[in-house]
Length: 180
Ligand SMILES: [Cu+2]
Image (cartoon, rainbow, N blue to C red; front, side, top):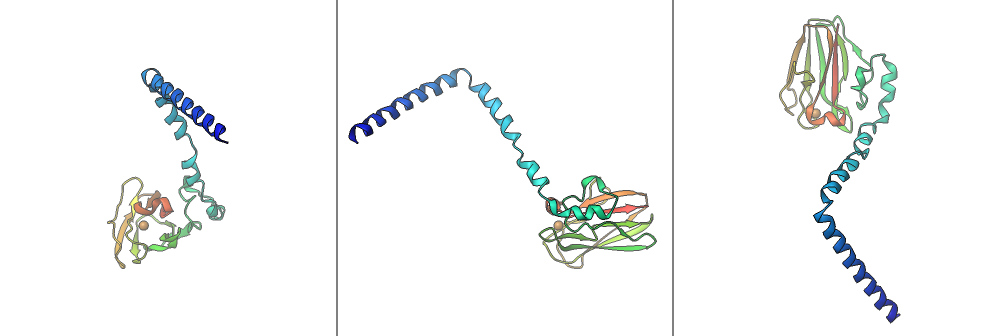
């Protein structure tokens, strides 16, 4: 037992010395190459992809409507097709409906309106602070949490307007207004 322990200790010491000298050699010559190669392979780790494809529970919503909004609603739990509100002068969307793991939804998530319609978003006071921010910057509300707060926008041109609540976008707090 004693001799084994002794030889093992000596072996460890030997390895330690070897690796130190190897490290020193590495420092003077090829350390730069090693540093530039390693992070690249590390970033190709599919950790980020796992996050985005994590949301397999929302596929039933897509089947209900032919429009898929280029995947905009893939991770939106409460997307259930497009509510047809064409012909209405005023359309209401609730901010902070129960969805996406909390009060992190727009209700309805997607609505179809006629040109010239004013859409009014009304905060229900749940889920903390929210905002309504168009992806292309055409409209942007304040970031607030007060129940009863409203934001409105009149859609004069046809098109698909995607928007999100910026703080909760990654959770799936996203919406769209289809204007025709
Ligand atoms: Cu929000």
